[in-house]
Length: 211
Image 1 (tube, rainbow, N blue to C red):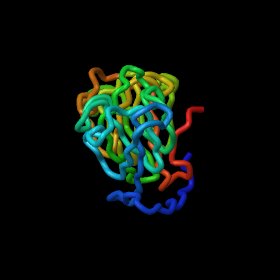
Image 2: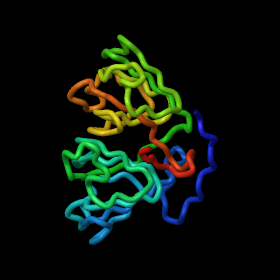
Image 3: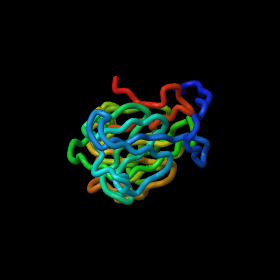
């Protein structure tokens, strides 16, 4: 079901206005539980530790969403960071395989509507599944296999997961076409759950909560 559009929240002083009208602010702490040195960001950073921080121990997203990366220069495993608190690394990493987060950028949301096509084979071939304004914790439960080799993100921003119930490595799909799984930096064409990425510009809470 499509939720009614909510008006954007007012932008506080010092917050960055994104190119599509969104405002973004994130605070990165060196230690767990929001302790130690901190750095506030309102725009992308290819190296979040370049100014006095040795590592990233916890994160507070005041307005977003943001996309974090395992390595510098927006490379490696991806981590979706929606509005909320992340007291330690395993609160933002669904794969639990790396405690490193070295770069971040705002994740632009182009619409409150969401529509995505998943294809079994590369080049938009084979079986197809269409998802409209919904989150799907298990593709199997909807009669679709776990092999997803190409994708068309027609509206909104989405995140796919390696395993059911939004577990495993995350793959973000901003509006566009992805004709082969290596275009979303996957080692194999495996996605078993998919959900929408939300923003308080369009949704009141601007964050995702597991049922």
